[in-house]
Image 1 (spheres, rainbow, N blue to C red):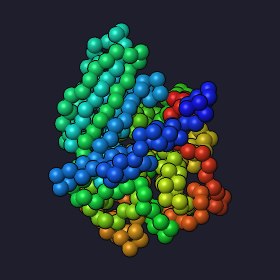
Image 2 (cartoon, rainbow, N blue to C red):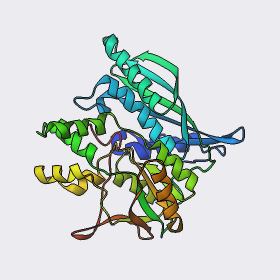
Image 3 (tube, helix red, strand yellow):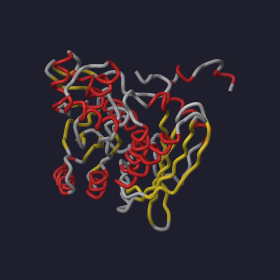
Amino acid sequence: MGEYGNKTLSSIGERELVDLFMNLIGVSDANLLPHPDDAVAVRFSGGVLVFKTDMFVASTDMPPMMRYYDAGWKTVVMNVSDVISKGANPLYFIYSMGVPRSFKLKDALEVVKGIRDSADVYGMKVLGGDLGECRELVISGFIVGSCPSGRLMPRRGAKPGDLLAVTGCFGLTSAALKTFMQGLQVDGELIQIFKDALFKPKAKVKEALALAESSAVTSSIDSSDGLLESLLELAKINKVGFIVEDLPVCVEVKNFAIRFGLNLEDLVFKGGEEYELVVTLKPLELENAIKAVKNVGGELKVIGRVIDEPGIFYEGKQGRVELKGGGYEHFKNGLD
Protein backbone atom coordinates (compact mmCIF):
# COMPACT_ATOMS: atom_id res chain seq x y z
CA MET A 1 0.00 0.00 0.00
CA GLY A 2 2.91 2.27 -0.70
CA GLU A 3 0.76 4.43 -2.98
CA TYR A 4 -0.69 6.12 0.11
CA GLY A 5 2.72 7.33 1.32
CA ASN A 6 2.42 9.52 4.40
CA LYS A 7 -1.16 10.55 3.69
CA THR A 8 -3.14 11.12 6.91
CA LEU A 9 -6.76 10.32 7.64
CA SER A 10 -7.59 14.03 7.87
CA SER A 11 -6.74 14.41 4.19
CA ILE A 12 -9.44 11.97 3.08
CA GLY A 13 -12.09 11.91 5.81
CA GLU A 14 -14.33 9.21 7.20
CA ARG A 15 -16.35 8.37 4.10
CA GLU A 16 -13.43 7.83 1.74
CA LEU A 17 -11.69 5.81 4.45
CA VAL A 18 -14.76 3.56 4.78
CA ASP A 19 -14.71 3.05 1.00
CA LEU A 20 -11.09 1.93 1.21
CA PHE A 21 -11.88 -0.44 4.07
CA MET A 22 -14.75 -1.96 2.11
CA ASN A 23 -12.45 -2.51 -0.87
CA LEU A 24 -10.23 -4.57 1.43
CA ILE A 25 -13.08 -6.50 3.06
CA GLY A 26 -15.17 -7.06 -0.03
CA VAL A 27 -18.95 -7.12 -0.42
CA SER A 28 -20.91 -10.13 0.83
CA ASP A 29 -23.87 -11.47 -1.12
CA ALA A 30 -25.51 -12.20 2.24
CA ASN A 31 -25.91 -8.50 3.02
CA LEU A 32 -29.24 -7.11 1.82
CA LEU A 33 -28.02 -3.54 2.49
CA PRO A 34 -24.74 -3.30 0.58
CA HIS A 35 -22.26 -0.47 1.04
CA PRO A 36 -22.65 2.50 1.34
CA ASP A 37 -25.61 1.76 3.60
CA ASP A 38 -24.33 1.91 7.20
CA ALA A 39 -26.26 -1.07 8.56
CA VAL A 40 -26.19 -4.74 7.63
CA ALA A 41 -29.23 -6.93 6.94
CA VAL A 42 -29.33 -10.71 6.46
CA ARG A 43 -32.07 -13.26 6.00
CA PHE A 44 -32.51 -15.51 9.02
CA SER A 45 -35.12 -18.17 9.76
CA GLY A 46 -37.65 -16.75 7.34
CA GLY A 47 -37.17 -13.14 8.48
CA VAL A 48 -34.65 -10.32 8.21
CA LEU A 49 -32.15 -9.34 10.92
CA VAL A 50 -30.49 -5.92 10.88
CA PHE A 51 -27.18 -5.15 12.63
CA LYS A 52 -25.48 -1.86 13.43
CA THR A 53 -22.51 -0.65 15.44
CA ASP A 54 -21.66 2.95 16.32
CA MET A 55 -19.18 4.55 18.67
CA PHE A 56 -19.20 7.45 21.15
CA VAL A 57 -15.80 9.04 21.89
CA ALA A 58 -15.59 11.67 24.63
CA SER A 59 -13.06 13.97 22.93
CA THR A 60 -15.17 14.36 19.76
CA ASP A 61 -18.72 13.57 20.88
CA MET A 62 -19.06 15.03 24.38
CA PRO A 63 -19.74 18.79 24.42
CA PRO A 64 -19.73 20.97 27.55
CA MET A 65 -22.54 20.33 30.05
CA MET A 66 -23.09 16.77 28.85
CA ARG A 67 -23.34 14.24 31.69
CA TYR A 68 -21.92 10.73 31.64
CA TYR A 69 -25.50 9.45 31.91
CA ASP A 70 -26.28 11.33 28.69
CA ALA A 71 -23.26 9.75 26.98
CA GLY A 72 -24.66 6.29 27.68
CA TRP A 73 -28.15 7.34 26.61
CA LYS A 74 -26.94 8.85 23.35
CA THR A 75 -24.80 5.83 22.43
CA VAL A 76 -27.96 3.73 22.35
CA VAL A 77 -29.89 6.32 20.31
CA MET A 78 -27.07 6.59 17.76
CA ASN A 79 -27.37 2.89 17.04
CA VAL A 80 -31.16 2.67 17.24
CA SER A 81 -31.62 5.52 14.77
CA ASP A 82 -29.61 3.80 12.03
CA VAL A 83 -31.42 0.48 12.51
CA ILE A 84 -34.91 1.94 12.43
CA SER A 85 -34.11 4.01 9.34
CA LYS A 86 -33.89 0.65 7.58
CA GLY A 87 -37.38 -0.30 8.76
CA ALA A 88 -36.20 -2.60 11.56
CA ASN A 89 -37.44 -2.89 15.13
CA PRO A 90 -34.56 -2.73 17.71
CA LEU A 91 -34.31 -5.87 19.86
CA TYR A 92 -30.95 -6.35 21.62
CA PHE A 93 -28.04 -4.12 22.58
CA ILE A 94 -24.42 -4.93 23.51
CA TYR A 95 -21.79 -2.36 24.46
CA SER A 96 -18.05 -2.16 24.96
CA MET A 97 -16.68 0.59 27.19
CA GLY A 98 -13.13 1.85 27.49
CA VAL A 99 -12.20 4.13 30.41
CA PRO A 100 -9.02 5.46 32.04
CA ARG A 101 -8.04 3.85 35.35
CA SER A 102 -8.52 7.26 36.99
CA PHE A 103 -12.18 7.37 35.87
CA LYS A 104 -14.55 7.73 38.82
CA LEU A 105 -16.66 4.71 39.69
CA LYS A 106 -19.82 6.79 40.01
CA ASP A 107 -19.31 8.16 36.50
CA ALA A 108 -18.82 4.68 35.01
CA LEU A 109 -22.05 3.57 36.68
CA GLU A 110 -23.84 6.63 35.29
CA VAL A 111 -22.80 5.67 31.76
CA VAL A 112 -24.32 2.21 32.18
CA LYS A 113 -27.48 3.65 33.75
CA GLY A 114 -27.88 5.85 30.69
CA ILE A 115 -27.46 2.83 28.42
CA ARG A 116 -29.99 0.84 30.44
CA ASP A 117 -32.61 3.59 30.55
CA SER A 118 -32.28 4.48 26.89
CA ALA A 119 -32.59 0.83 25.86
CA ASP A 120 -35.72 0.51 28.03
CA VAL A 121 -37.37 3.34 26.09
CA TYR A 122 -37.09 1.26 22.91
CA GLY A 123 -38.07 -2.04 24.54
CA MET A 124 -34.58 -3.48 24.06
CA LYS A 125 -32.66 -5.91 26.23
CA VAL A 126 -29.08 -4.98 27.14
CA LEU A 127 -27.19 -8.27 27.02
CA GLY A 128 -23.85 -7.10 28.43
CA GLY A 129 -20.59 -6.38 26.64
CA ASP A 130 -16.92 -5.73 27.33
CA LEU A 131 -14.84 -3.40 29.48
CA GLY A 132 -11.29 -2.19 28.88
CA GLU A 133 -8.79 0.50 29.76
CA CYS A 134 -7.98 3.43 27.48
CA ARG A 135 -7.04 7.10 27.72
CA GLU A 136 -10.56 8.54 27.48
CA LEU A 137 -14.16 7.41 27.67
CA VAL A 138 -15.12 5.36 24.60
CA ILE A 139 -18.44 3.56 24.28
CA SER A 140 -19.11 1.29 21.34
CA GLY A 141 -22.62 0.00 20.81
CA PHE A 142 -23.86 -2.98 18.81
CA ILE A 143 -27.53 -3.47 18.09
CA VAL A 144 -29.62 -6.26 16.61
CA GLY A 145 -33.03 -5.57 15.12
CA SER A 146 -35.60 -7.37 13.02
CA CYS A 147 -37.60 -6.19 10.05
CA PRO A 148 -41.09 -7.45 10.88
CA SER A 149 -42.63 -6.47 7.56
CA GLY A 150 -39.66 -7.73 5.56
CA ARG A 151 -39.72 -4.36 3.82
CA LEU A 152 -36.26 -2.90 4.25
CA MET A 153 -35.79 0.82 3.56
CA PRO A 154 -32.31 1.10 1.99
CA ARG A 155 -30.51 4.27 1.01
CA ARG A 156 -30.60 3.20 -2.62
CA GLY A 157 -33.87 3.60 -4.55
CA ALA A 158 -34.68 7.30 -4.94
CA LYS A 159 -35.47 8.51 -8.44
CA PRO A 160 -36.46 11.82 -10.07
CA GLY A 161 -40.05 12.69 -9.33
CA ASP A 162 -40.05 11.17 -5.83
CA LEU A 163 -40.99 13.44 -2.95
CA LEU A 164 -38.58 14.36 -0.14
CA ALA A 165 -39.94 14.21 3.41
CA VAL A 166 -38.73 14.37 7.02
CA THR A 167 -40.19 13.37 10.39
CA GLY A 168 -39.41 16.57 12.30
CA CYS A 169 -37.84 20.02 12.37
CA PHE A 170 -34.13 20.86 12.26
CA GLY A 171 -31.66 23.28 13.80
CA LEU A 172 -32.11 22.74 17.55
CA THR A 173 -28.89 20.80 18.03
CA SER A 174 -26.95 23.30 15.92
CA ALA A 175 -28.28 26.15 18.03
CA ALA A 176 -27.61 24.19 21.23
CA LEU A 177 -23.99 23.52 20.30
CA LYS A 178 -23.40 27.19 19.49
CA THR A 179 -24.96 28.18 22.80
CA PHE A 180 -22.92 25.77 24.93
CA MET A 181 -19.62 26.07 23.03
CA GLN A 182 -19.72 29.87 22.74
CA GLY A 183 -21.42 30.67 26.04
CA LEU A 184 -24.39 32.44 24.46
CA GLN A 185 -27.00 33.73 26.92
CA VAL A 186 -30.52 32.36 26.39
CA ASP A 187 -33.45 31.94 28.78
CA GLY A 188 -33.93 28.92 31.00
CA GLU A 189 -36.80 27.41 28.99
CA LEU A 190 -34.77 27.47 25.78
CA ILE A 191 -31.72 26.06 27.58
CA GLN A 192 -33.82 23.05 28.62
CA ILE A 193 -35.09 22.58 25.06
CA PHE A 194 -31.49 22.69 23.82
CA LYS A 195 -30.33 20.20 26.47
CA ASP A 196 -33.10 17.76 25.60
CA ALA A 197 -32.33 18.00 21.89
CA LEU A 198 -28.58 17.57 22.24
CA PHE A 199 -28.22 15.32 25.28
CA LYS A 200 -31.45 13.27 25.40
CA PRO A 201 -32.42 12.77 21.74
CA LYS A 202 -35.09 10.28 20.72
CA ALA A 203 -35.13 8.02 17.69
CA LYS A 204 -38.34 7.89 15.63
CA VAL A 205 -39.05 4.17 15.97
CA LYS A 206 -42.84 4.20 15.53
CA GLU A 207 -42.62 6.49 12.53
CA ALA A 208 -39.96 4.33 10.87
CA LEU A 209 -41.89 1.09 11.30
CA ALA A 210 -45.07 2.75 10.05
CA LEU A 211 -43.25 3.99 6.95
CA ALA A 212 -41.81 0.53 6.30
CA GLU A 213 -45.30 -0.95 6.48
CA SER A 214 -46.69 1.68 4.10
CA SER A 215 -44.51 0.61 1.15
CA ALA A 216 -44.27 4.30 0.20
CA VAL A 217 -40.54 4.78 0.86
CA THR A 218 -38.04 4.54 -1.98
CA SER A 219 -34.94 5.47 0.08
CA SER A 220 -34.22 6.25 3.72
CA ILE A 221 -31.46 7.66 5.91
CA ASP A 222 -31.28 9.22 9.36
CA SER A 223 -30.06 12.79 9.86
CA SER A 224 -27.40 12.16 12.50
CA ASP A 225 -24.69 13.73 10.30
CA GLY A 226 -26.88 16.69 9.34
CA LEU A 227 -29.69 17.24 6.85
CA LEU A 228 -27.41 18.43 4.05
CA GLU A 229 -24.98 15.55 4.55
CA SER A 230 -27.89 13.11 4.47
CA LEU A 231 -29.10 14.59 1.18
CA LEU A 232 -25.61 14.55 -0.30
CA GLU A 233 -25.27 10.88 0.63
CA LEU A 234 -28.61 9.95 -0.92
CA ALA A 235 -27.83 12.01 -4.01
CA LYS A 236 -24.46 10.30 -4.48
CA ILE A 237 -25.85 6.79 -4.05
CA ASN A 238 -28.84 7.33 -6.32
CA LYS A 239 -27.19 9.64 -8.88
CA VAL A 240 -29.90 12.26 -8.40
CA GLY A 241 -30.28 15.75 -6.95
CA PHE A 242 -32.66 17.36 -4.47
CA ILE A 243 -34.50 20.63 -4.27
CA VAL A 244 -35.75 21.72 -0.84
CA GLU A 245 -38.74 24.04 -1.17
CA ASP A 246 -39.95 24.20 2.43
CA LEU A 247 -37.28 24.78 5.07
CA PRO A 248 -37.93 22.33 7.97
CA VAL A 249 -36.84 24.73 10.71
CA CYS A 250 -37.86 24.59 14.36
CA VAL A 251 -39.66 27.72 15.58
CA GLU A 252 -37.16 28.23 18.39
CA VAL A 253 -34.31 28.21 15.88
CA LYS A 254 -35.86 31.00 13.80
CA ASN A 255 -35.92 33.30 16.82
CA PHE A 256 -32.44 32.19 17.90
CA ALA A 257 -30.95 32.98 14.47
CA ILE A 258 -32.50 36.45 14.42
CA ARG A 259 -31.33 37.29 17.94
CA PHE A 260 -27.70 36.29 17.37
CA GLY A 261 -27.43 37.22 13.70
CA LEU A 262 -26.81 33.66 12.53
CA ASN A 263 -27.45 32.06 9.15
CA LEU A 264 -30.72 30.16 9.46
CA GLU A 265 -30.01 27.81 6.56
CA ASP A 266 -26.67 26.79 8.07
CA LEU A 267 -28.34 25.95 11.39
CA VAL A 268 -30.90 23.78 9.62
CA PHE A 269 -28.78 22.08 6.96
CA LYS A 270 -25.33 21.80 8.55
CA GLY A 271 -26.08 20.72 12.11
CA GLY A 272 -26.54 17.07 12.86
CA GLU A 273 -27.51 14.82 15.77
CA GLU A 274 -31.23 15.37 15.15
CA TYR A 275 -31.95 11.67 14.50
CA GLU A 276 -34.88 12.46 12.24
CA LEU A 277 -35.76 10.27 9.28
CA VAL A 278 -35.06 11.67 5.82
CA VAL A 279 -36.98 9.70 3.20
CA THR A 280 -38.00 9.80 -0.44
CA LEU A 281 -41.54 8.74 -1.29
CA LYS A 282 -43.57 7.52 -4.23
CA PRO A 283 -45.87 10.46 -5.06
CA LEU A 284 -48.93 8.23 -5.44
CA GLU A 285 -48.31 6.78 -1.95
CA LEU A 286 -47.90 10.12 -0.16
CA GLU A 287 -51.30 10.12 1.54
CA ASN A 288 -50.77 6.57 2.78
CA ALA A 289 -47.37 7.50 4.22
CA ILE A 290 -48.65 10.63 5.97
CA LYS A 291 -51.61 8.73 7.41
CA ALA A 292 -49.44 5.83 8.59
CA VAL A 293 -47.10 8.17 10.49
CA LYS A 294 -49.98 10.22 11.91
CA ASN A 295 -51.65 7.05 13.20
CA VAL A 296 -48.63 6.33 15.45
CA GLY A 297 -48.52 9.90 16.79
CA GLY A 298 -45.86 11.28 14.47
CA GLU A 299 -45.68 13.80 11.66
CA LEU A 300 -44.33 13.44 8.14
CA LYS A 301 -43.61 16.67 6.29
CA VAL A 302 -42.84 16.97 2.58
CA ILE A 303 -40.03 19.51 2.14
CA GLY A 304 -39.02 19.02 -1.48
CA ARG A 305 -38.48 16.57 -4.31
CA VAL A 306 -35.94 14.46 -6.13
CA ILE A 307 -34.63 15.91 -9.41
CA ASP A 308 -32.39 14.56 -12.16
CA GLU A 309 -30.03 17.54 -11.93
CA PRO A 310 -26.94 16.90 -9.77
CA GLY A 311 -26.67 18.96 -6.60
CA ILE A 312 -28.63 19.97 -3.52
CA PHE A 313 -30.67 23.15 -3.94
CA TYR A 314 -32.75 25.31 -1.63
CA GLU A 315 -35.57 27.43 -3.03
CA GLY A 316 -35.61 30.29 -0.52
CA LYS A 317 -36.27 34.02 -0.45
CA GLN A 318 -33.14 34.63 -2.51
CA GLY A 319 -34.24 32.21 -5.20
CA ARG A 320 -32.68 28.85 -5.92
CA VAL A 321 -29.29 28.39 -4.23
CA GLU A 322 -27.04 25.36 -4.44
CA LEU A 323 -25.94 24.13 -1.01
CA LYS A 324 -22.30 23.19 -0.59
CA GLY A 325 -20.43 21.38 2.13
CA GLY A 326 -22.05 18.97 4.53
CA GLY A 327 -22.38 18.02 8.16
CA TYR A 328 -20.01 16.29 10.53
CA GLU A 329 -17.37 13.94 9.21
CA HIS A 330 -14.83 12.16 11.41
CA PHE A 331 -11.15 13.06 10.80
CA LYS A 332 -12.21 16.32 9.08
CA ASN A 333 -14.30 18.07 11.74
CA GLY A 334 -13.52 18.82 15.35
CA LEU A 335 -15.94 19.08 18.26
CA ASP A 336 -15.92 22.86 18.01
